[in-house]
Amino acid sequence: MADYLNLRLRWVDGTDLGGCSYIALVAHAAAAIAAGKCSVALITMAGRPRSTGQSVGVKPRALPPDRPEVPFDSASSWTIAPMYGMAAQRHMHQYGTTSAQLAAVKVAASTHAQHNPHAMLRKPVTVDEVLASGVIADPLHKMDCCVISDGGGALVVTSKSVALRSGRPLVKVLGSGETIQTNAGGRVDLTATGARESGRLAFAQAGLSPRDIQYASIYDNFTIMVILQLEDLGFCKPGQGGAFVAEGNLVAGQGALPWNTDGGGQCNNHPQNRGGVTKVIEAVRQLRGEAHPAVQVPGCRFALASGPGFVLGAGHVHASLILGRE
Amino acid sequence: MTTDTHHPVPWADDPNVAAQPENRPFWQAAEEGRLLGKACKACGHFHWTPRVVCPFCRSTDTHWLPLSGRGEVYACSTLRRASPPYTVAYVQLAEGPTMLTNLVDMAEADMHIGAPVQVVFRRTDEGRMAPKFTGVR
Image 1 (cartoon, rainbow over the protein chains, first blue to last red):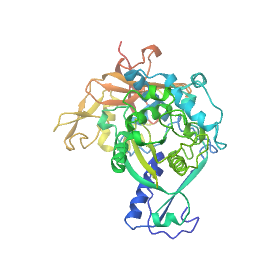
Image 2 (image 1 turned 90 degrees about the vertical axis):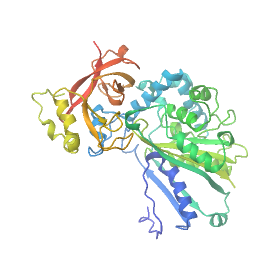
Image 3 (image 1 turned 180 degrees about the vertical axis):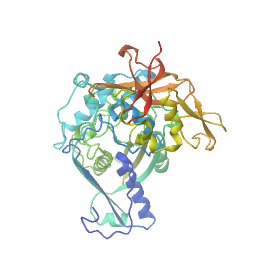
Image 4 (image 1 turned 60 degrees about the vertical axis):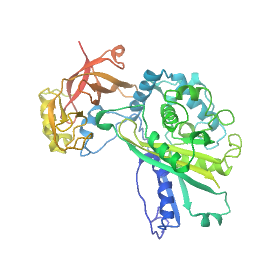
């Protein structure tokens, strides 16, 4: 992109954290600006996985055998969908979570996506339709999975003095956190996400708690991942995520925590198989009051964008960002 | 799947074996139907996947030990979209660590959390023998 636009740069960050890269890069850019390393940071991404026929969830990734774990793990031909299937199975086993509760995440996303003319899946769906959509990897159904879409996104991060000249509503980075959730030397816990740590760091820096958040963009590659992160971010107690979503708490204008009001990865888009950038974009829209009127949170002052990179259960990154309306 | 005797790729030429000389004892043992794991002499704990540095105490005094090959299913998921479908699992070994693997030759009703399983070895397309798990008979 720098070459395409012939930009003259004085600071570069190519950190690749998978899907959450663009959440973490906002924090990296804010730190660089605060340190005087640059004045305006441009974060971009785009990709065409749908046009090029990628089926990332059900085909094994070709990973190089010189990565330490690969010769041992790749013999299983693991793919992304059964990893999240196993996480869902554990959550059901430990807490009694049901497939119908998972489906409530899709229902909430589709309720929002009907207002988004760009969403891939605009038709509101019911719990029964999710449960009838066929199993991809037990116990996950087709409609528990996000879409595969072409697309892209961009974010501009700058100092307050420059931002004031834009004439646009100001959104400030209040807190951020990032971490790597390892497989702990073989002491695997598939219900634990990096959101526990990235969220804790972000809330601590912002001086806020989950009850202050009026809108949340939470990465939704699979419905179970939303439930796990809601618990790990502190929006509900461990094991209560299924009940929390089934009560309609994610639905704008109805629940306690309006979530992914663009339709999210479940219904809107998942460009380059990476949902981080659109999570930040919708949070900024909410804070500026520029979301669709049907899903706009009135007087939205504090928002969260949070998500994983790479794959739960195979070692994943996690990044969280708390943003505030100035 | 190719049979052992007619496999075109010798196991030691599998790129997954060749890339990591320090783990050759594991694949040699697998060829002989034995499951090895790594434990730390300093803290005594088994870990997985095998490392030269203990992930718990950071000692470099890790060594190969035979594993019982017994464990129980921590989680499993059958990929229905694959043809034919196959089951990915995390199996918690009796010695503690949890291993990413497959469940093979098991009835669907037997594949559940907590199911007792034992190791069997299957040759991969790349050439090496790899540990899988099946029901305890």
